[in-house]
Image (cartoon, rainbow, N blue to C red; front, top):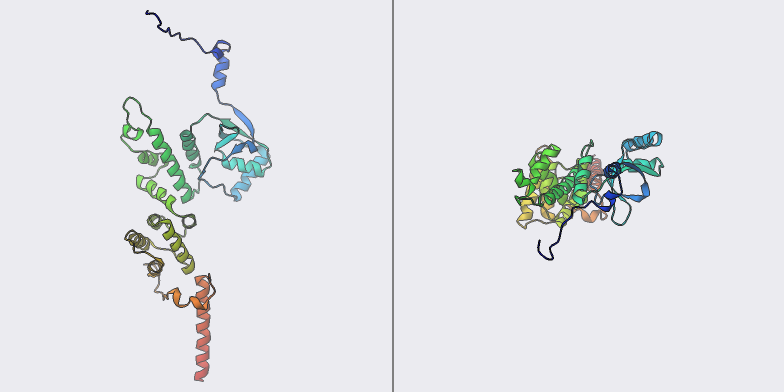
Length: 310
């Protein structure tokens, strides 16, 4: 061995020298801890809504009587405290039940690992809103892509190693087709008010996807027209709105014209540009109120004409 050569000795760590195997195994084993609620923050940009509904009230009553039976999952934060991974509803129920602590499993997780677990645990719930799926799928897909960028001897992304792309793998995990996953993720491009209309069932999935391609300012104009005229676009109308937008030929008048077109399942309707009657109403008067006022005025007019005929 030459002069200056370094000898590598595989010595155990100092902690291992002064602890038993049982103690080392226990250190690796996850345990349940009671953690104060005020030390746990929500997962950043958590896509699932914690609804204050009857189910939540029932859960709170159960927690009040029996406590939280399934521990939540958290991870430690670099500057102290904990971050909720799975258990946001249990945490809210505990707060409603006036509990001070909640049983938790503390796990060391990377951002991407935490994101995947957070999404997977919440997708087991029933009655998930389209907006919740949209942002959850987007978050998980981005995390999967980042995980796939890690390389090994083949230097190939995870999706390619498996002969599949991340969106296909995600689809198999959640029981959705690739195209449906992509449709949901498109919904994240909608402005919040229109996305709320999708959650409420006022706008169906397919037209909502088409509307997601409109720039935000055009979506705002569309929202104003929908509210004023009390109507939403059909799939065919949404396709037309997207086409006019991509061709640079869309404005408030075009939006009104397209929404005024008769839908296939509608009865024939009479339409009048709002510009012709706006001066007779206060700014912001809902379309339905305008319509009712006009009908009442016509009824009064008919009665007066009949009176003259006599």
